[in-house]
Amino acid sequence: MGAAARGGRGGHLLPPRGGTGILNPQEIPLSLRKRPDGGLAYGIPLWYRAMTAAMIGLVVGGSLSGGGAPNFVAWIILVFLAFGLLYEERWVVDARGGKVVHLGGVWPVVKTTEIAFGEVEGLRLEAFARGTVPGSGEETEEKARAFAMMRGKDSDNPIKKQPSRFGAKKPYINLVLRTRTGEDYLIDTLPARRAARFRKVGAAFAEACGAPFADGA
Image (cartoon, rainbow, N blue to C red; front, side, top):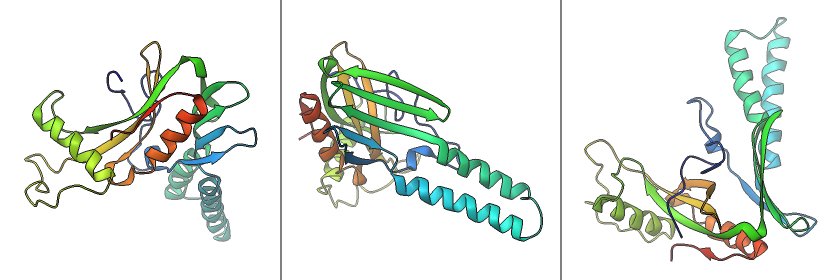
């Protein structure tokens, strides 16, 4: 179904979902839910925002109970917690509007991208492994291993589990939406062992959009 999607969450045309090293937005779990209008929403769950808000309250409350303003360390923690609270990563399948909508960024600077159902060619799962050379035999092997890991059928061969010269390679699975004009949008990415749920998410998106879904089987 075309070339590999580039970047982190957000994909080919949308900004990649990066990380700071202290707070990595890509580690925020996204969840799928049904909307009242019959569409779908895939994004940061409410419990995560509630937990982050509670942590901000604890840090502020602890500082105030000490009789002063937050110290330098507390301010650093608050900045990263606030970033997590205001960070937006959401995909919406608008059944009534007949379009897929992506919202990404940090409020109030959030970019919106819309893709009409008629522009969606399909969705797919694709594998990649950091540290491999594109087009190499090693890359092909690692991609096959990634899909096997996703299905829980990877080999127990100890040779396969030995780290490479530059450290162990960690296969990932991408959930990608492709348009009829050849543009790839990376909806989400996870380590292969945690990516089994992408088969459900991808199938739900594809059904709602009236498009095919390739799960790598």
